[in-house]
Length: 319
Image (tube, rainbow, N blue to C red):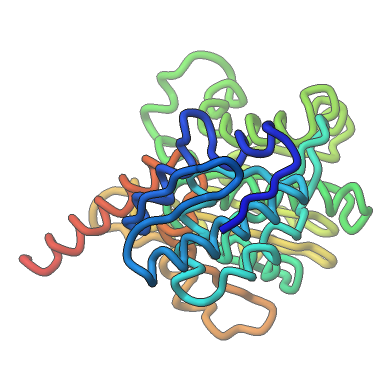
């Protein structure tokens, strides 16, 4: 196939540093890819070579539109091409969820993430479950910030259960805020990246943004707010019911968690697992399940998640 890129920079973006991108494509499709002048040569099984050609063509289109091409996106593009859905990758990338204070676009990177974002836009309550690295919390934060900027809500409330909220928490130094700070740190980090430290601090001072442990939600009614409950797999059924009944008028809520990483004492049922059973089919509630395929962190994370899934499946069969 003919390669007609406008510059050497575009060529480098396509192939990646040390040809890392094309190496990923070769591994995925068991083909060999080489460049002769401006012509890309693909050797291998006829069907796989055709898929490789389709993927490369789509990658070139993405580069011309200013998109970033990396190994993880190439692997995802190959998965879509095998299903005859390669064109859908443009629909995914075309949806800009938010723009950070530094001007970086936050976009969906997988079909699962796109389904998640659509569910949040269309429902008052969205429950999103999936393994680490699928963007559950980060996308929720981004959508909350956008809703606040668009004046769809008056405030953002972010909360997490502090699993060690019993005896061990008492041994930590400082007041209650300082004690629970380590549990809430991942939420702060995401907010700093999306809105910047100064904007974050201003919103906190005004009471427009609140980050608090789940225990602080009891007895409150959260109206006209965008509420996010993170790490919800570590709530008890009682805590989950308490939280869900805090929702007030004109509020939107996202509950996120990873049911493969429940840290509750053995024998305690997760409130997230129960909520997924209880609320299935309830109007206004959407339950989105992300998978290892939606992992967008380092590609090694995706391999780790899949390895654990395979191990746990094998253990279950042998039990």
